Length: 426
Image 1 (cartoon, rainbow, N blue to C red):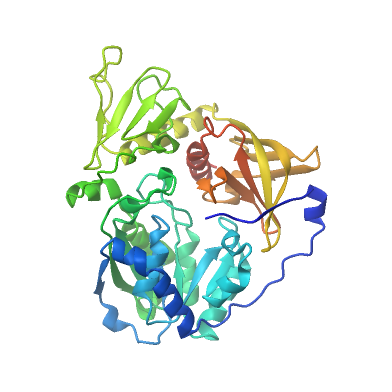
Image 2: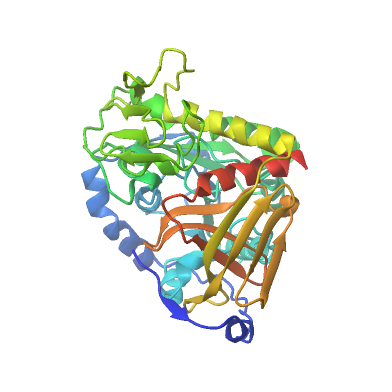
């Protein structure tokens, strides 16, 4: 999948008319049929099955807030199949509307900016429920899981649920991450996918709970580990490219502790500095490979990708506490100012430190600073629309999509971990 990009100057983009707010339009039965039909081949390929729990409590036409964990693009096809008999609107990142706004609105999508506080989104959701009598589908993690475990949820989610005063339903998937993990360059593997749809909370229950109680409940519902689940369900991923791109997640060598020296290739991940190597087995475990020049006996074992990623998080947190964390990358900058196309406005430098993000470029015309408390997370992505690994920062007016020039050495996963940890520390 690609996206329309236009070469422009920073001044030209800033002079564009401001994006006007448009209310969501009613989703037709035809739109739902088209979504369901479009998902057919993928649903068939993964032998999709699902179960329901407590859904008799939800009226056939009663609006609800459907919350779904976010593992891969397959999630949208799962939702299309499970919700095909119910009118629903999907909260969708606004870059998904680029070049196809009319289509996206027709199928029932509501645009929003990832990790940017927007009053407009809440108004759109309220309008959708009250005026269109429609349900809403949200992926509250906002970004795909990097390592197969939960991405932090916004603390504002409990407040939103209290405000909306409609039933909350949870859709949990198994196998979608194994089918199409983000790090694997959009290469799909053979894996069966299933899901459960569970009625979590009714309006009366929501009214009797505090925001913290709701958030605590959702934290438990969204806690998962796809690799451990793979082992428990005895699923085998036999493709010989299952380790391709794994260095995007596992960027730090546990042996020599260097960063940006790892390479995921074939079924393994290897450090080009010290020759440490680990295999991602068919069962989903990590196995350190014995070598004469690499002592793996004394290393702390990372049994799963999620363990290694958690260790990297601990390392990032320590750097922040000691004041040594700093990322500095030369980047190509794309801007999102409307829904017609992305605008490539030039080159610049992106710095991330305990002070937050600082972006400068476009021959000195662009300067943007984002403090750590601006967002609880970071929109970072691998192979974004086939353009490359990317970090996106910005505010309600503009968003800046930064593509490191050195794609082989850039570590967008570390920036995401640091942003999440900084938010909790400051």
